[in-house]
Image 1 (spheres, rainbow, N blue to C red):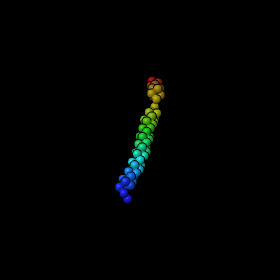
Image 2 (cartoon, rainbow, N blue to C red):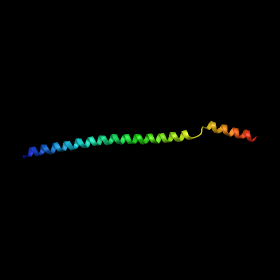
Image 3 (cartoon, rainbow, N blue to C red):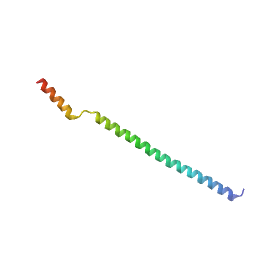
Image 4 (cartoon, rainbow, N blue to C red):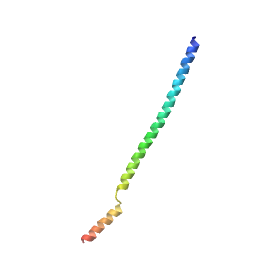
Length: 72
């Protein structure tokens, strides 16, 4: 093998490795973004669920008024 063939072979393998690395990097970035989006959705849904589990203030005030009326 002469030097030109060796150099071209090394360059071709290097280009193949570079393309594989770039493809993996893009897939990893997309996967990471999806994972972060899913975690954010879980956090927001958890906060909304905790807010929905609270009793409405109007119902609490009606209950207090009813207790006061019964005691009086």
